[in-house]
Image 1 (tube, rainbow, N blue to C red):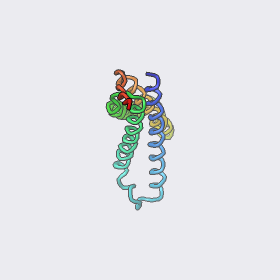
Image 2 (cartoon, one colour):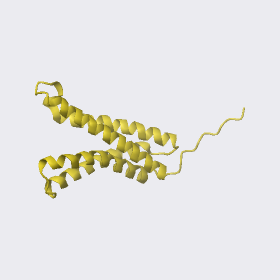
Image 3 (cartoon, helix red, strand yellow):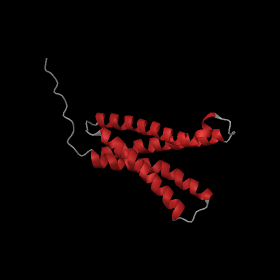
Image 4 (cartoon, one colour):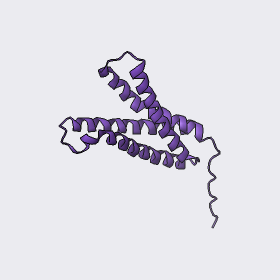
Length: 143
């Protein structure tokens, strides 16, 4: 149980950091001017980056669950991605509506949420969903 949770937390932290680095690099690239390729469609870059990092997280979680001989790795991937979006949206909403922050002060709050939210979401998903008995290992043949 602890190993599954740690696996989810580590994978979440890695993909959250990668997603934040991707967003920062796109923003720096787009500061060069509006004539650059992905800058006109920044609304498509964020969801595409999220999908890429969520798929990478799925690959890591499923491989980790397979290594640990646990079931339901795909369920953890789906639940973790949904929780990730929900947590970031909740932090964004709270920071805009209820915290008395200037616009420049909201950036670090959202940046921390982008890294911490997948860590928490994949850890909670791995803890909640992977409760079955481990997958039975095939018996080795005695030839």
